[in-house]
Amino acid sequence: MRIAVVGAGGVGGGFGAALAKAGADVTFIARGAHLAAMKNQGLRIEGGRGETHLVPTQATDDPGTVGPVDYVLFCVKLWDVESAGEHIKPLVGPDTAVIPLQNGVDAPERLIPILGKHAVLGGVAQISASIVAPGVVRQVGTFMHLLFGELDGSIGRRGEAFRAMCEKAGFDVTLSDQIVTELWMKFILLATNASIVAVARQPIGKLRDDPDMRPQFVAAYNEVIAVGKARGVRLPADALDRMLAFNAGAPPTMKPSMALDLERGNRIELPWLGGKVVELGRELGVPTPTHSFMYAALKPYVMGTPT
Image (cartoon, rainbow, N blue to C red; front, side, top):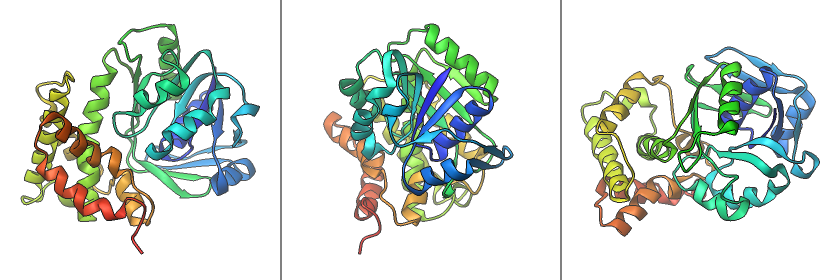
């Protein structure tokens, strides 16, 4: 099975290394110092699930040298979706499955005009990991779950084959017949947690049990749930309870990637997370006061720490 991982950060590096260790033919599409380190020293994954050192690591910045693959794990930042989609066209053959693992809910609809409707699936990555040095990814906690599926809800051969490969790789995997719902369930959680943790500059463990913060989590989750329902997304009746249960069980030091980017002075994905909640709320006539405040507070940092 030939797999290309586009973007070898916390998500792409973590899942890609596990798949390569299990015997898949994995090539990482990366750039800069991270690419150089992977080519020279291999890719190292550290953290709660133990250490994996992938040597040698197949890595390149030129998809044209790889050619069509069976699966693409598409793990770039949200602002790079269109440009990276154009860049990876050489990887996509007639039956290639491209699985976007971005935060947010709109990556598939942004990729379809570039790569074609048949190529694009939906995907959700549940992992807390980030690059801590060139060639090194560190994971927080042990949870590692990949959910994916055809956007029309069908279950086919390519989905079954990839699920089997993921099972062999040893992480949790779900081949879903309702991936749009799954995308929104992650969006409810992440749009809220990313903004609250970024605004507070504290990890989830410092916030989830604070009696002054808990109502803010509840209000923000409910705003995203209301927006999703107004958009026609089928969400479970216990969506709020699931969000709170996730927080209760999360590693206390966990911070969403947007909060980590903020701390490092990097560009942040706010427009596609909290900003998207606000945008859709305005379009659909759904009030989003909690997210509107957090979006306004974080907006000066969208392109990195203001100078």
